[in-house]
Image 1: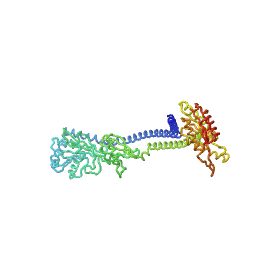
Image 2: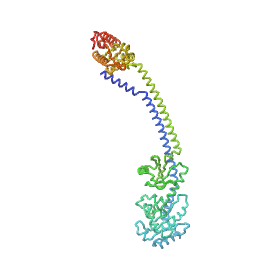
Image 3: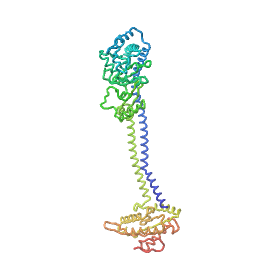
Image 4: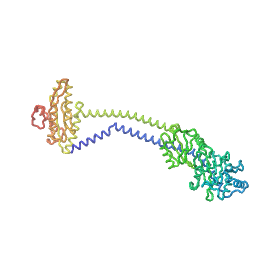
Length: 569
């Protein structure tokens, strides 16, 4: 039981020593320093990234607000036009010119296509189709009792269109398309042959059909995108439309279209003075409407995965940002347009700005600090290893014999004091073996001291390989050795001594190139339980006296009692 405890204690001390190995401690300290410096640097990076994101959103917000203000002007005027027409439906003007409009309509309403023009310098003409055309569609109706009021309201709208043509807002076109078979537009038709296809084209546009009671129950402004407008252009348009309702009846649709190229120019003007970056305008279905002039893409702006992530982010929040590799994309929903504004900045563009310069400087400082730290780690670790090796060497030399690599006399006596005290306290057996090589002086005299050293180191190796790991062997004199055997009785020690004697005697030692010799040893054994004393000096003295008794009895033998032993052959 005690032997197991000794083994466990030795393992524990060995593990503890290994754990607190100086090189490991140095490595751990430097790892902690590197980790702490990296965490602090990363914290600064996070702060810097937050500031960068805030700056990107601020620049995006400035451009978005500038575009939003122009959109707001258009929406406000569109609502103003609707309110004016509703007032005109309720209280029409009783001027002669308005009566002329009604009379002109009654005269031409059955013609395939017709127009009513008053003063082209102040108002816009009304274009219309026949009653036969109206009857062909369930969407159209010319039988409402307020039809004449609608005609005069549309003529008044023509005046308002003229007055607002030069307002400070984005270039745009305005329309009123009636379900009664006529329309007003801010652009003139080249000839009357275009009335029917133009009216039919306007009826089929999503911004008109999407304003029915079923499609727009809230009857509010809705935004649409269109690739053509009235057949006049193949350019894209962004269109705001609102239904004209009065007394629970849907008369028609008011619409205002903004050319996408004009919006793109607005984006370019709004981003002047900012860092490089690409602005893009998307509708609510995440379809690209336009981007700032000077930017062209031969490949899709976003791949399918990025497109899905952006669409999900926009659906969840009105503003935000995502990182895609070397690009940072921020977005913001416009207040007066059913869409989003995006700002895309690449890593190269970001590095050219203030945040890029700070980031590069911060990265260089971290690399420089880490390099200096690694250099200091290498130097200090080497110094610590050298000092530890020197300390181990000095400590080993202080406790061990350099020739035999066994404990020296001082170390052996220190270990003996500890082991005998432990044995005394636990009342365990304890034994001592004294060993002396026979005729060793003759080896030195005949073959020289180098041969004597070989004999000593060879004998020491045989002794240490014979005893167990709990036993302790040491050199106490020139050719004298001592072995401590804790937890061993006298009989067990005698068997160990006999094995040592037999192994020493049975081995030949090469002392010169062609010369081998055999040596023998005399051994004396003593035990604590036999003598009744745990004093090491007493036990060694008894073993030593028995050693000389063995020598006097013929050498090459083990003596464990005071009577003379029989010599071994």
